[in-house]
Length: 335
Image (cartoon, rainbow, N blue to C red):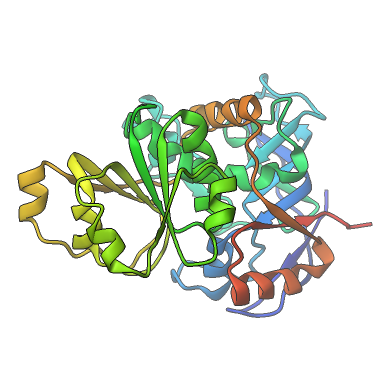
């Protein structure tokens, strides 16, 4: 089998047509016909080798929506033709302490879909069957791809922090991640506050936010002391961490899913208020299945803009230059 793709041969290099032959399909693996693939900021980081772990030629793409093309002899829970999605992870060992406890996403031997292997900017992609998540009825495959990275990234903290429908939750940064977090949290039943730049208030309220805070005005933040049970930070920049921590109630949690460079905060307010700082990656296959069912039940979907996959370079440039508040998705147009 030959796989057609788009690959960069150097950091920040133009993606060019690329073709490769994978090895024989493993007994626990599946091949997926890619219908749609979202573009994530992590793709940009890998493209640029920002994390110094990219291998070239690099085929990005880890927000995949497609159909099972072939399956290994040991795969019994998926059928050829079934609609599935694939996110950042493509393999876990299944035998370490984390995997045995169901935390496959924390496996130290875990494999990334675009780390040392080729991803979803292609007509096909391969993965361990465990990480090919069935797409339920009620979730549109055309917009499903970003749920497998951005969606589960912001859904997982709701589960990890035992968020209650009675909780007051703030979402810091309403972009590709934050706009999905607002939908999940409002449908969860929480009182939701969006922290974003001026001009976005109407948009965030339409997504489910009950309140809007101009994050560029620190006086607004000062007035919110002792307000939130959870602050979900989706941005990847330094913030006035002490000020944000001051908006937490006693026992409140500051949870990061955006890759901010570092967090520097005074310790005494954390001790005195029994507050905590944490973070998380994407969720396990089980949490991903729950996220998809919740999305289907409540009509939750990312806002997307679709490009033909043949226009991948234009799409990457748009994401890099504009950082839009929605998700960009590539549609397979290989003939």
